[in-house]
Image (cartoon, rainbow, N blue to C red; front, side, top):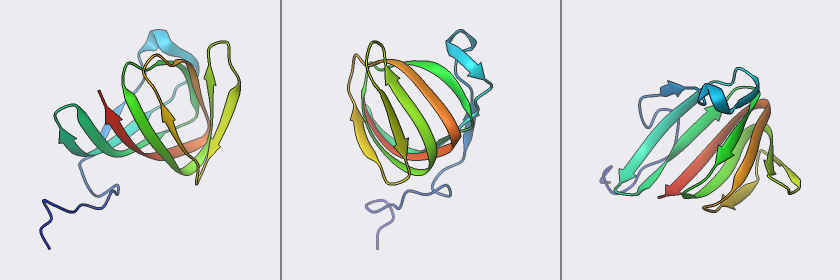
Length: 115
């Protein structure tokens, strides 16, 4: 099998990159992000992302598909309903989405982003 044409998403698929949200966006806590970006093709990226508990403001200029693998989070759109996302949930966030992401239990997701 050609590993360049078929790739499993896992935390072993790429070197982890650790980051945090910009300080001006943090609402509560001290969330830490770890990203394993397994594939980059121009404006398309996919991999795995993990966040520790905390809450921060989000704004999407890109399209993103997410599947929660572990944990519990609340995604709230400005002026809209809070959505609880947990292991097994899949969803799409479209460009223009503004709101908050709050991690209640360390959350791991698979993602595909199209910028």
